[in-house]
Length: 295
Ligand SMILES: O=c1[nH]c(=O)c2[nH]c(=O)[nH]c2[nH]1
Image (cartoon, rainbow, N blue to C red; front, side, top):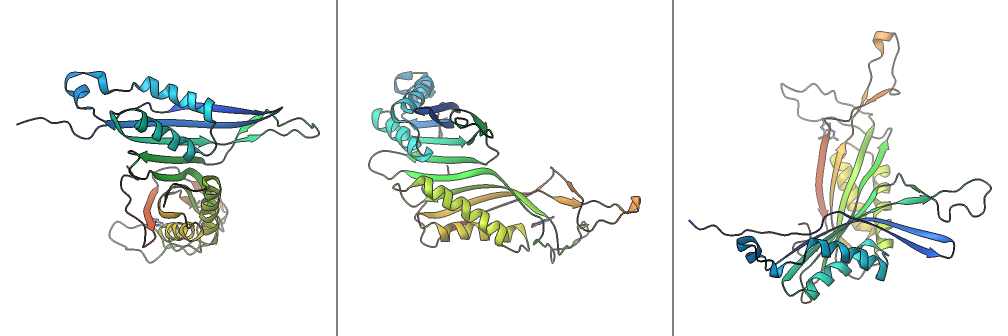
């Protein structure tokens, strides 16, 4: 029996980089978490510890900071592409780069009455986290770009039903015609190509997700998921595939009868676990092959 090296990759995970751009007294903040993962001619380092082909993860981290200084961070997809291309194109032993970036939003602090407030004071936003994953494997092939978001928490206080499901000997769930539907939207969408306005595209996709969540009278979270994915694809011609993972954040109507009280859908127990986890992909029928986009 012979032992061989299987798929492998390595890189610096979670470089936290904050880029401040000074526009006179007005500052702009970009707060990111960058994870680099490289692969290539890594047989010798695994077999005999020969590091000649290895670009240290420490250098990868330094590159993230240096690029943030040299080029700034506009859209996270552009920054990820810049890094991915740099690692593959500058190092003959590196054949593939995966760069993942998370962006954390900050809002300006604005104080009543003061005119110069908010120019350099920020409060971490309660918004979702914006994400992207870029793969690049050399000048001959197109990079793949997946954008997305995590933790977009939404709730419909009515307009949701769940009935008609299988009832077996273990079923206790009662069918309902009116329930609270809440979820944390985790979504990742694949762009058809490289040349996008990623900022506008992100806002359009996010808007479509929210519009579809609010606008769908839901018979199941699965139906809502499909409607949300479909609306993103309809609103954004530059996107060909979307993956969604949505926990069903159950809100159980509390039985207040022991206290002589009714509860006409007003008081809920918001359980945090266990939760139903609904996952699915929606794509256009002409979506090109995904390649390694989802790896
Ligand atoms: O929208 C739902 N989908 C399910 O599959 C499910 N299962 C469950 O217990 N509640 C729900 N709700």
